[in-house]
Image 1 (tube, rainbow, N blue to C red):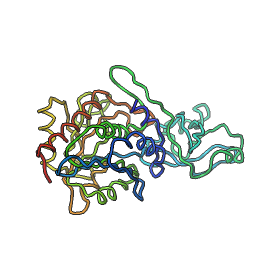
Image 2 (image 1 turned 90 degrees about the vertical axis):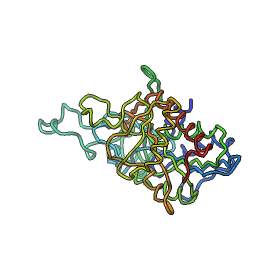
Image 3 (image 1 turned 45 degrees about the horizontal axis):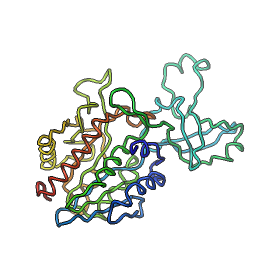
Image 4 (image 1 turned 30 degrees about the horizontal axis):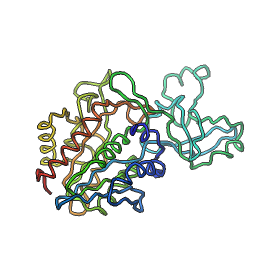
Length: 341
């Protein structure tokens, strides 16, 4: 299954080699051109059968992850974040390290050995170690080096009522939408951009947009789902099962009003449920894309994701499938001249 294949692949920011190859193998027979730029972005182009606005569809390949920073004398591994991760979700989580996927588990001093004061405070990064079963620093160095990267070892699984859990739905769910869309035929020229290093500052998307010079751009992103006990109703950014989310504003973009209104019309005329992304925090690759060259008319469709940036994330498969439908219907509307630069 596509979601399983993409989410289980390894792809820390700046180390997207494995996920890039997985996507390449999926798409290589369905495009006119596919290449990698100097940043590591994977770019696929389809010429279409007639002239029209060139549309860039973009999703990022990288995932939040960890980097080994030091190896203690007893063989335990110190590490740092790559991207935004809450230290409180790390305890006892399984990881794999490096190209050889050395298994490990994140550990900390057990509660039995903690002082009364320590028990009142969250465990911080400096108190955590990755344990690979090594008996000494020299033993650990046989399989792991400082600078190696690690990702969570969570596997894809469908659970409950039309739900799926895995690591890296942010943004492998967007990559999956692009792959499914890419395999369909459209009249207008399309560029599919699988971007690098989004999680550490939207670094790949700017060069990608500059090089491909689109007339329109659409980013597909996993976003925060806040339908969890203790979250105020007015603070719920998105909710699972209500459909793909359209953005009005976030930390990197005030979204184009004409683009947003057109996307609403497409969803409503196609009978596709949708919701608005509430709140202005966070950002995604559209923050760089819409500023490329003289500016690009653009928008975002987000797939609500519970427990985002955590070892196990959850999506609604209905939201995913409706996002695929909405992207297709948006492109059909562009074919018909419904939105121009």
